[in-house]
Image (cartoon, rainbow, N blue to C red):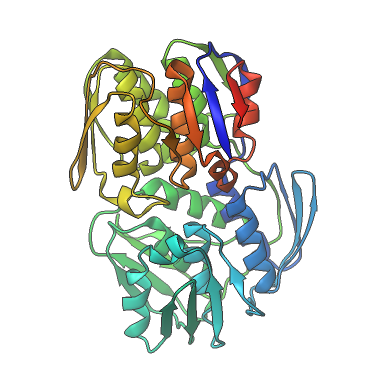
Length: 400
């Protein structure tokens, strides 16, 4: 989809969409429970649809009415039947792989870009335990059985690997421990996982600050739950307020554990002057932080190394697209420097690079400077109603 972005003055109030991160976790817990659960306020993005399709393939059943999902769980006995279609969802792929390790062969499919993303944490762990993980174009096939015990993993990898194991280990006989050999990054995402597990009656505790203790033989209990607002997607509208527009947000949870809640603090710092901000615990904010930094006083983002393995090489492609507005950006191995520059309408059409967060960031730039945006349909991955929300705020655009 190609859009013409028209310089506008946003105005109004928006209710933020449901959290994709929490929806993944709550749906998985419900699917592992014994009995019927209800998950309310679910936004059916492509990523969430992928997780539901995979959970069906593992034996759960779903009834969807509007934004409410009634889940009949598999009673803690996930068994793969057919392919598990992960589409482009890295969370889905990494969450589902451990749930396939009950001795049977399972094949998970996905886009070429998804299958390029690292799985070395699982590959190394499984190889040491005689579990097969075969990567081919467009698919990953696993076969074997994971037993309880002690698992050692680096803490500076994606929290999705640890979360995948935390879903599985409570179902195994015997206690397990996950020991992180380095300090944790993206710890807030693990807080979301522990919160979801606790909600469904599963106990995981800390031993020190790097070790999870997981009692075995546990049972996921059915629950009725509501998905809270999404802080990472709220940030795109929060950016408008930070840029001086009269836009307010509703639907946020003031007690959320989401790491992306720092957008409010970070935008305030960007508005005051050139600053240095770490995205170690909020990498998904990097594209919109780069955008707001360009429109304010510049900034340096640190701990950016993981941006390379997102839906696109986010640091590089954001630098490429923002350069079309005159921005001067230097991308290093673990830092991005945004210089305060003289900006102008884009010198060429903008590309979304098949990355939902790049598309939404370009839409925010377009509010000031206009432009033609190609690949706008990528928002369906996480926030299908994004452009409808923008129109509600008096943001001008037309489909070409």
